[in-house]
Image (cartoon, rainbow over all chains, first blue to last red):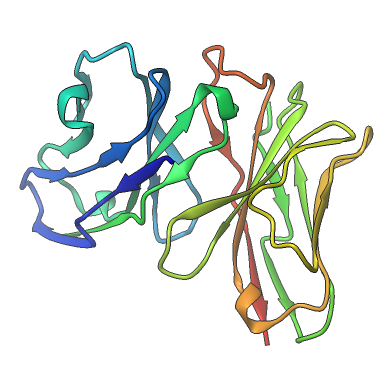
Length: 116
Length: 116
């Protein structure tokens, strides 16, 4: 069965600090997708990234970067020089291609608090 | 191009009433997914529908919950005889394909159901 674990329930940092959110997943499928979503206090889900299991290249988008390591089944998310607007709950999610692209298994989320 | 539209954004129901949640997928999308987010938890898959068909309802509670996606009009998630435990945020996502072909996973803004 698929499972996503986000062991960090809540992280507090001061603005401009770097912060890494951990995500560990379990799946028996060899082809799967991993996602990160942001849920700000307003409640909507904001898509951040999708990564397929065949692409282990790390990705950087502005202050955001993602480290995908198949060997440890991890897909960690780093925010560099954090800002107050980064305060949100962040969810990691997994889908297996044979269950349909949008059938996602979510972790329980990590609440990030960035203080000025 | 409007995103996934959900209404209402907030819904209050008394115990025993019915709740109807609507989801209009993105233009051109014929696949809809419903998720539920209980307070302080991650999202959990409920049901996957294609136009006029339920493809996967493995996450739906056996009683009181039903979903449809008619040929015309939005997808409807119906909860009959609501109880306090149904209080949650309900999110809808849509996609044009069953299997991912470069599509991103976009969610609506959610409907927050409160049962009093």
